[in-house]
Image 1 (cartoon, one colour):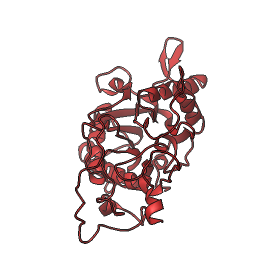
Image 2 (spheres, rainbow, N blue to C red):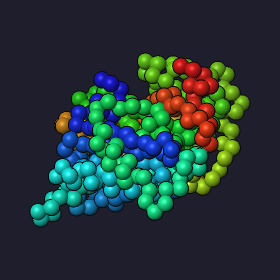
Image 3 (cartoon, one colour):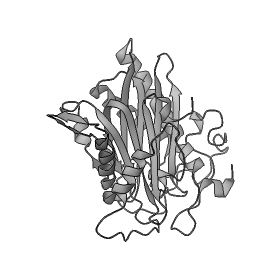
Image 4 (cartoon, one colour):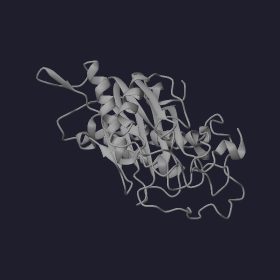
Length: 330
């Protein structure tokens, strides 16, 4: 296992970014259409085609997901992914045509110092197309794709991924997350991660919790600008789930953000978690096994958050906090 979301067979991830704009896009492609659900808890979300994921909607499966920077402008990235899929004949069949189904979400990175004067046409459609074209099983981490221009309360944000086997079941789970949070991923201003209890094999420094807990552990972040933050995540499993079960998986996985970021799900954030099922593994006890998968997804997502910040690198000259590695190495 690579400790990436692509440990779930049939999933590929591609990134594209524009250094001048200081923003980027990540496309998550599926070799075959997948069942999906979503849970949105932030107070300022920006999403695309999430209504289709409600269990009562007609479309049962999706072809891809897209996560993008750029706030509302970044929603254009979905059109680029749709174009790439359409060229390959992918999509929901209606008569003799196919319509690619690509839900997604965006985060706010418009105040990071990049050149956002792009005129009538934003760069995000092209970034979405490029991200789809670059999709593979190898997932770069940190300052890449949708995480390129991301930030948190005290550190450079980034993109993280992790995976796990689900104890007591034949299933696997994986997570991918773009961390652009209003809150902190570390305990106060220090180097220790809130997700420390869930770490495996030193994947984000093996530092554990600070002892004693620092006085600033729960202090309020310095900046509070409504709508300027968002953490976007995808959890995936190879278990065979319905749309309703995928929605429940997304709900359970949100706890991973609560374990890794403080505070989270605020009116200042647009936090959203998607859940997808490739359906390759049958479950013998769907209710109990789904509970196990959801718990594992939350733990895996918490790890992915810390991994993304641990892997991020700075963007000199931009309005960005320092990267974790600039302060503490590793």
